[in-house]
Length: 192
Image (tube, rainbow, N blue to C red; front, side, top):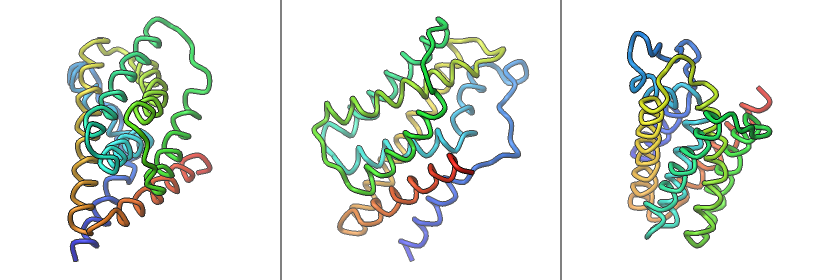
């Protein structure tokens, strides 16, 4: 029963909500627009949850260092967008991050913290650049604070889910399954 509930929760958390639009900063404020922004893109949600799942699989210092690298490099990517520094293939790189991180979780890849942080940091650069490109009328720094907080929350959800799965299932089989589902969902976003 617990396994079914975890699968249902994971499926619901990865479903897109196309009927929603990003919050208007004029109505809700730049911080609220930034807080909501990552939750309205399945690509962002899937990648950020996968980062948390992978950090939980690695364990130890990776629990904070891997998601921390993502958030830090996402801020760099955002700054690049504000400074109009172009990055090639931003959207394809984001979609590739969903597939790659899903495969990494599915394969339960165990890397040292530094290379794992470098991998997620590279992907985060593109996620941050995309957020900067979608700034609109929002104030840059409140918007950035909002999406960084939302990212941390998504990472924490992935870490919590991954840790719970390992504890409850006595191993990482369900986490690996979720990684596979993430990779397939990423592929669906690419070809859908």
